[in-house]
Length: 285
Image (tube, rainbow, N blue to C red):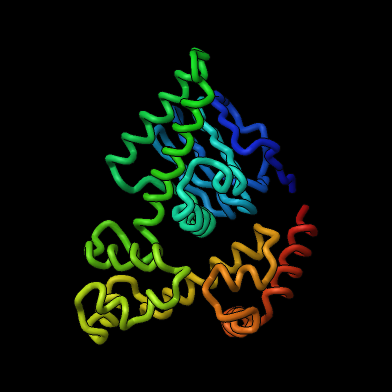
């Protein structure tokens, strides 16, 4: 199966196709795909769903995907890497959240835009980029770069609002506030203890536990544990950080503490996990 690489921090492509020139393939980068017009079927990790104008999909590294075009389709592709997120004008405090959100979006088919105002905003941003590419006016590159940043943030907001999977458009606003608080402070263990969270929101620990479980279908501690585990996995898979550096970033007391935590969740050490996943990735290449 073909695996594509990206040699620039980001790449913007507008393309009209009558048939998909590629069979199932994987990327080593993120790809946002927006449908300007046309219909067809998208396949991500063996799951299929119809697409139409206004749909947007996020393809994350290692997702297996392809398109079956039914009627002539005008595509917008935005391809970008972790390097772009870390080296551009995103605020330092937002970079870690953006990485987590994009890496852990549900790897399923279907439009990732759930919020109607954001659908209109994305459409306007994509159309503005199209005009910039067609006109090649003054400050073209600078404007496109700013539009790319905005697009990524709007997409991340859409994904984050509906994480975890059980959270949906009807979830209580307070539950979303709690999730947002945890995401903001996941690198600060002392701020996401149950007693600290309950004090921050002015509710008892007992009620907080019942309330969170009701709206997310998992306990607060389970959510935090799963969140931290996925962040560690992302660092192991998509960075060259040493284990002790990951431990420091994630707020563990030392490398041994991280090893114990990760082994409990995954059944093997971070070092072995990284080695096995790299071997698997090489075998698929």
